[in-house]
Amino acid sequence: MTDSALIARVLVSDDHAAFGDLVRRHQSSVRHFLRHLTRGDAALSDDLAQETFVQAWRGLAQFAGHSSFPTWLLGIAHNRWRNARRKQRTVPVEPEHLAALEPAPSPAPLSDLRHDLSHAMSTLAEEERTALHLCYQQGLSHAEIADVLQWPLGTVKTHLHRGKAKLRPLLLSWNPTT
Image 1 (spheres, rainbow, N blue to C red):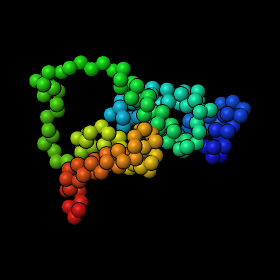
Image 2 (cartoon, rainbow, N blue to C red):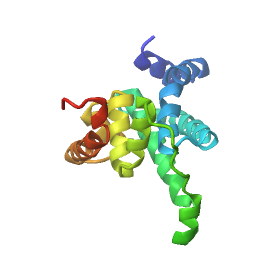
Image 3 (cartoon, rainbow, N blue to C red):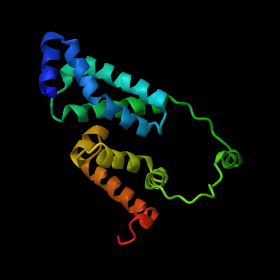
């Protein structure tokens, strides 16, 4: 069944099994996106994913279909993450304490592309990382990213362009011909 058919079953007959099918179909991409946003915090991302689907259940009647259902879900997930981040209290850390927390560089050469990419991505601004993740790992179009993040289309394109420009010199050794 298509997402639209499952949504119709939920709305018309309060079909919990149909919503369960929607959750099973989309939970992986929602969790993956939230793990990216939480920088690998599995517990927090799983909690936020659960909140995302609860909110989707409660607000399904407001789903207007202007975007795809997965895009709508990722938008809810992004808002849940932003709300959770706002609630976190940050304690200022003195610079000398920060230096002590940084891991010492490894003497082993960095030869794995996945590791190098992860390291390079960590140097980007949060907005650039998020836009690149949605584009290349979630496979969303620029317009869908704009819907998820509630950014103007030009802002999405700018963050993608800047992020790729910053990654290029960091990953040059993997493709020296570019």
